[in-house]
Length: 413
Image (cartoon, rainbow, N blue to C red; front, side, top):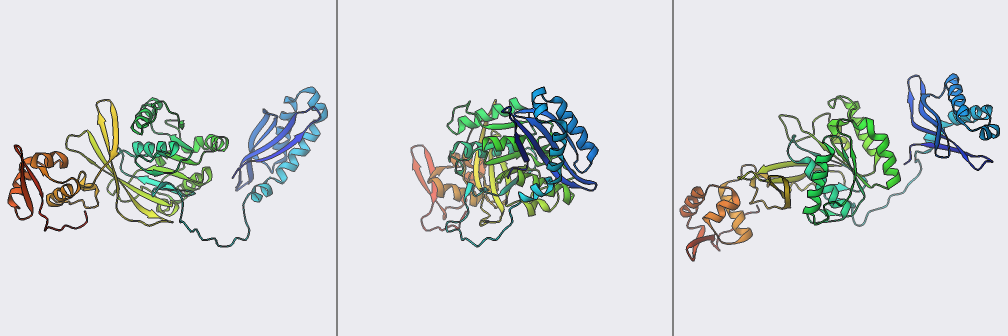
């Protein structure tokens, strides 16, 4: 919905005089707004003020009239400028209220369920918050998700193509350009493929929301990702009112949005701040990570913890980020046996880890099992040797391969 109110007056000169109001709101002292008087695409005068104060309207009308050309001023003198501004301001609040859609509606069942931009994490017409402690890969994950939706590539996520805008308030723009090139390449896209960004490191959402709204309106953006909520600038996140303003702002900016958020220092199970974050989001996604033994691969688990229009399964979607000495090298899907701590069982035993791997890929040597799981080889070898009733041995050349006995059943991993 366009939050602006615009009134146009075509002049005999062929030009169009415009009265534009933005940021219309009720304050304790009266109705306030940013009012712009322009001619075609040129601003004549503007101010943010209490539109109920006549002396302020006089100053704005006089300023705009002085900025007009002589011929235009003859056709539209200062008295007409002031009268039109008085009428515009007097009816402004009713015009804003008139933008609100109120009426009778009947029920209409969705036969195919809700639609998703990125299933099951981003629902069309809803807000998603992805949360984790700092430094866990939220920004990489957010960019992977955004580029996947923007390009319509379902290599990692199940997406429908959507025009995306990434709002970066955290990092240097050159750093983000490098990440975008790496993510593009990992998705099989040209490294220089473009996506819409706001790069305003050190700014707050409050400072850039007007520019974001205008860009979304002009470019038909369908999904916005905010990195991150901590840069909103609306006040203490532990207080209810600032959190409500953040949610209201995101809902007003774009009908589908994703925001990255931190968790409390001692508790990674929810978003840092007021409970109204939980109430305001449609989908909550907990991000967890596990670093592989060699330290160059990070497993990422995304678990839906809240879904207003869907089912919370509790089973994470797993993928791996592989890094080299310069940064992200590639990403790929991952499995529970590779990152057992992300599978929902943080106390995964050696038995479950090895069994999950053997069921997934078949017979392996103790060395291969140790390499794939990150377990110590001597412990793997000892464990397999001590459990001959569960694991069969087969010689393949100089190697001994281990597999599960056919009469052994094992539960869901």
